[in-house]
Image 1 (tube, protein in one colour):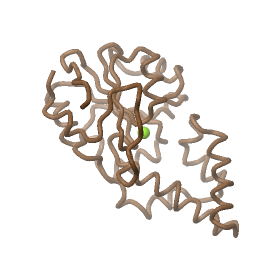
Image 2: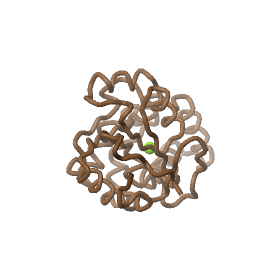
Image 3: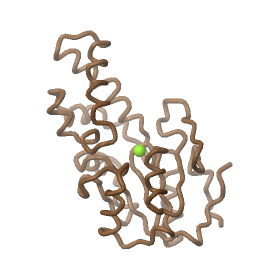
Image 4: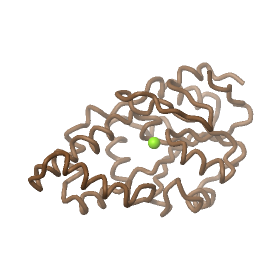
Length: 222
Ligand SMILES: [Mg+2]
């Protein structure tokens, strides 16, 4: 059971997108399956060789904005990543009970902000498919701020961009490393998603309260 959140002490909820509001399956399938397949085909490599080469590129920029940048990967791998995404649109889905959770937060008067490392181009593909903006007050891609959420610079830039009290803010994300960055900055409350990808086993979260399904938090109490 997650620790009940003290909702009366929370004014703002910052929500990650991929793996938090949206099923990570779309991105997992794209990056772990379609991209290696297309890269292998283009370079006449075996799938194993293609994966090894791509993994080396992934590791070189993990945790930086480039890792999340459609243009960087299109250029580096020589693939039309935007076109590949268009083939997989039906895989873009809300995570279980994300919509009732957002509706309950809105009814409780919370400021709702999408805060994602996703590139604006990735955000717009998902926005077009799901209408995210209808359920949120504001959507911020960290590419606008110049740093990814892993960096304290990013949180400082957010504080200049957004009117909010960090101590009265809840941050929801599927990355323990990013949740830790938020806690280090002084965000008052963290919540982890244990099952960001509906097709994969749950991840082990040790440092933060964690849930599988937003239904665990409904109705909002506390
Ligand atoms: Mg995420």
